[in-house]
Length: 339
Ligand code: GDD
Image (tube, rainbow, N blue to C red; front, side, top):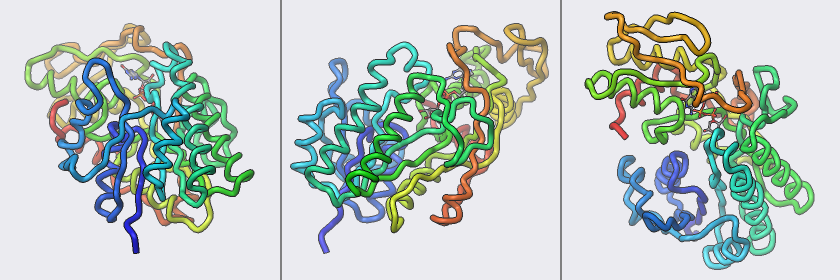
């Protein structure tokens, strides 16, 4: 039997690297799409591979862009992938408010270009779309596949449009295409401007005496944080199902940004207590030093207050279960190398 080929867009990101590692272990020939960058070229953004012990010799990288339909057709023509994992995105929600057109181009038009290329050139391939819990917006928690979606960011709206494209292509062209509606998932490979990694790196710098305090935005925001390692396994499981469908992956546990900070400081042997309210709230250590303060600059134009997923469909139909709980996730991030 010939070796199966997987194409991962957004392979340089946290999920791309975990997924590449997982697929290589499953015997796949892994191809990855990387955008060219005028400052660093295309391949200098691949440091995550080394950090996860994946050799770049084990992946075939292609310079390109999902926003360019000629490029996506060319990729499908030359690679003939059996599986496509579309992880390419402007993945930072706050950034999508500053560059909404770029967010729409890569997330929405990019997905359309890939689906078109697939239906024309490899109609029997399988397509995974990285849909997001951000699509739910402020719909009441817990959220599942049947919850009404009310996104409140350009990122969330672009993701919802891509989600509907996947459903349309599935219904209209009978292609195998799934939406993985993933709640927040983190790891030691997380970029430093997402709140979990920002806190983890801040706590480490404070412990080492390199920094005094972490400035954060909305401490009351609540998220359902899981581990990226569990979630890429879930992506793969969705692609093995008999019938294409949409699945939520989540832990079902919700914590505030404030409690993530407490847990990270606790891993470093520090206890944080909170004083004040709103913009004046501070987190103080045992010695009375302010270690967390609030900075308005990190608030979102529109805040998504509370996400907590109900992954019972994925548990029932795929047998997927997360193996990391909140404490294990925080510990793994705190034990990871500095980034
Ligand atoms: N980034 C950041 N920085 N967020 C902060 C900060 C801060 O200093 N202070 C508070 N927050 C709050 C944000 O307002 C948000 O409510 C929450 O922390 C989480 O922010 P992020 O870690 O940036 O993640 P996100 O929830 O906006 O988006 C992530 O999860 C989505 C799934 O729901 C990203 O990974 C998305 O790509 C993903 O789709």
